[in-house]
Amino acid sequence: MFSFNAQPLVFVFLTFLTFFSLVSASPISVTQRDVWTPAVITPTTGTTWTAGKTYTVTWDTSSPPAQITNPNGQIYLRQGDATQSSPIAQGFALSAGEANVTVPANVTAGDDWRVVLFGDSGNWSNVFTIVLAA
Image (cartoon, rainbow, N blue to C red; front, side, top):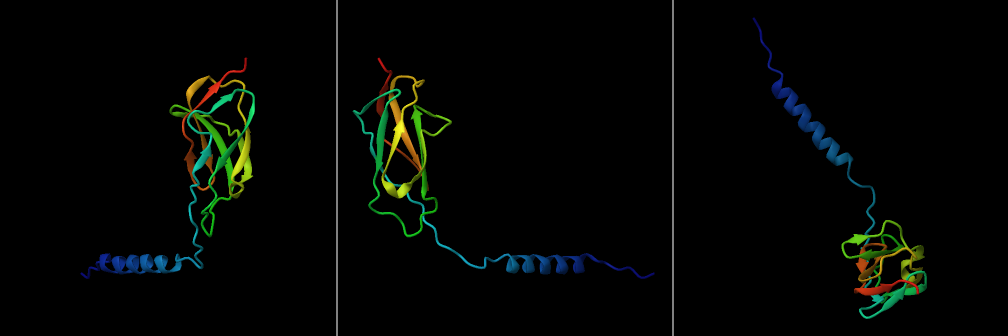
């Protein structure tokens, strides 16, 4: 009786399919994009903000990359290890170097606050203080 072993043919077929899928999956065009992490300038250590008031956050725009991956920014408040779930500013151009923010009235007073600037990456300010309105 004749017996046929299909394992070598299956191996060759699967190897061919793997090679073909790798070749066909190569990108058509590649665009180089850079991550930009501009340093937050203000607020700084020693700064005090009052809940409910508006302030300007500034960051260094002196050396942006040629291709900014995400040119639109967002700013969040962070106290200790917890970042607030909603941004206090969003939709501004990261290249602007500044954005006005209003401190929510319902924040907890403390001297362990930071602003977090998101665009291409998350950058933290120095620790500063937020006090409640009188």
